[in-house]
Image (cartoon, rainbow, N blue to C red; front, side, top):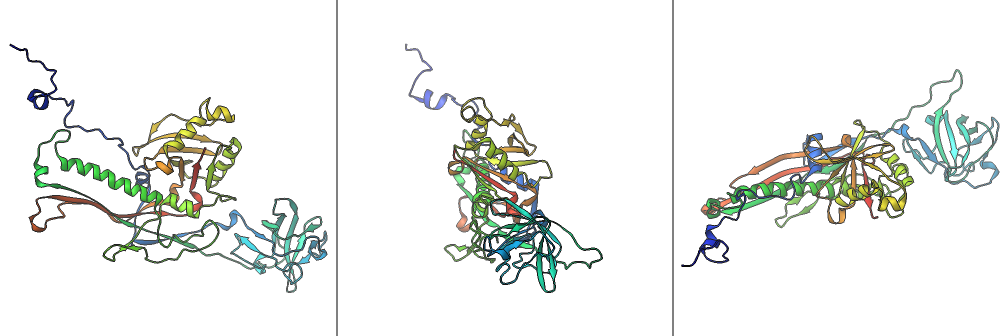
Length: 445
């Protein structure tokens, strides 16, 4: 008589009777926290907006930098020289100089000197930053004057006159006042729908791996719904923009309840994501630079200078959060090591151990000379965004909710449908204010 053996590759003993499953009701997933960016803004600040298209006020303090750029001015011409005496020169006549103000910052957008500028003390530098001298704005009759505070000053086209205070004569009257206006930016919420469906037969089936296919799909689709929101909040683009100047300085944004239409002619609104907004509206140079490129020539000097700009607007918490792709986190990890990139370039950074935030996502702390960055791995930053790092200002970012997330059950009932169709639905977006307080690093090294 033959002896029955367990090791058989066929027959009922192999195909039906043996149990190969360690835990037949448990299935492992790759990611447990798929959307840390959405989690952060939802817990940081959530606002119920009154309309799917919403506006926000913002204001930039003018005293941060007040200056104007000299317009047409012939270098070396005698009437463009401010003498070292009380005479001064006329500041806005046809010949002294022809176009006194080309552009201004923090002075209400003026293109000409007026009574409200009398008494301003200026530091005059060339466009390259060379100090020419210091002067004060005055008035003689109907003519505005500029008088040197010591030494002869040669005014040249594109010279930058920066306000360093104001000074007025003894017994004089109060100067004229000036003011600026609030600015307005906007965004939209968008309708997210993630459906799931099973037949009645499948719903009733007793299964291995997951005891209920409907329950499994509900969990999976919940994560899919959240991940698609995460990607929209990061990468999305809105028809009509958000009301800012583009990188080249042009203004093409127009407010309106616009978008595209679906097959039935219904309006499709979309939200402008943070990274999408930074790529379109961010600045890649200057004092307000907030888009940076890290290439193979990136040095410690570049790192220090860039972080100075990142932390020029000091966060209330003292720490800024940065959402990173795996490639970006890997880059900073290599720079924190003793070999590889760091060894070849001769500089390192300090990167802390992995910790877990109270909101449930992991992070590491990158120490910079100007502040601390909490690096949070974001699964949405993959592929083309693998080496991106988006640094956010918590105070200027919020989760906009027009209709809260809901799970709609049994939405298909026509003709006694033998099954279950549910869907996750929400109408949400992201509110982005003061774009210069957010920063984007693109690592190409």
